[in-house]
Length: 98
Length: 437
Image 1 (cartoon, rainbow over the protein chains, first blue to last red):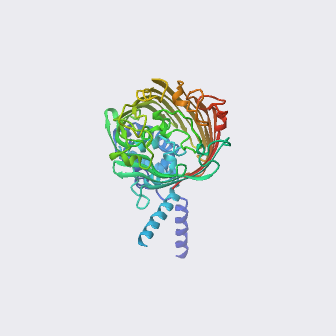
Image 2: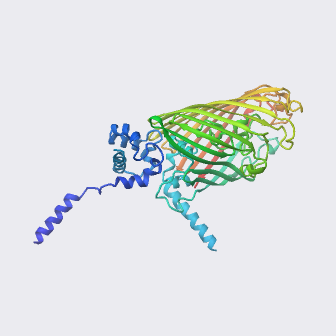
């Protein structure tokens, strides 16, 4: 019994070790992106504005955020945001415009 | 004691917030690093221009008191040394070779309401030894979408200097070298070239259509007295304008990738009394028309920016000629400036500027007979170069070393004042530590 318990625990550790907790795109958006995208184009949920951007794909949009483009500062002006954070926020904003 | 404790709490809160973002109140308000709005302060990035256009009012929802307080502070400590001052009147070279607190100031910088905000700076001027209002720009802004998903941003601005409301760094108020020094300046300067700073107050409307066309129109009045007096508080009245001064501005801008380009025109018509203490008679008319352009490349580690402006001022001496202050009934005064800058990782960098002002000879106006400040040939011509190196150990601290070299000063390269002084005698070295928090 003891062996089974230890083995299960070890297996669980192996399965979940190295997996980062899932990023909440909505939370990243609210804390970092809303300052602009609540008022500036492309606004959250504006299907007409997001339509052409969605066609470019999430990876391309995330790259624009990471590197900066036009009025978008590099990493949205938040250097502490990881690529995963930015990807999750982009996914959330794209979802809101579909 | 309680007031002191509250004050200390707020002050320490601001300092902690400043450390978190290394920027003053607008950075704390948005939760963004200062590189979002500035290449190297005070030059604006495309986002910085948008933030200003939208009334300084964008605020991150998770920013709470005291980080949300729109108060910042400024400290500039400087040292200036002019090449040759021996045997001259020391009044022409105030604070020469002295370390001085050049500016100690407070800003209201940020949001007022959901759609309004302000950038107001009052400060102690260590050169003039006065407390004064330097910048005042209170604005309201909103936007709406029109056909084909095109956005139109519009706003109102109440400010105290034509071009202080501008969003580009190619117009006079926001152009390089950004900080004045105690060194001697040439005698001639056009009215729109910050001559009316803190001398007037005005209300303007502005718009940016489709992130492409920027336009602004404003009317200014003298801030000598009345409701507009606070906009020039503490500033000695040197120029009093009559009635309203119309100001206009149009620019085209384009952004692609890490690049941005803008080009435009601006100008104003000002009727100015020759004597600020006698505002009952006729006035001189100054009609300024200017062109400007700006280019920026903002890459990951490298920033390149350049700006240029040309100002042409038609001077009609309707009052001064009759009163015997000028030799001509009219003159033309022109200024051209062009500068280029490079920064590596927003930490190391510098810039260089060529500047030139030229115009008609006007014996009575410029040949004052004074050593150092006069012009023996009566010409307003001055030109030269400014080179500046910058180091930013933190994003809110800028250290600068500047050298200004004159080719001509008040009309000539050699013996410009008739007393043997050369233009290069006014060359100067300027060291500056500039802290914002």
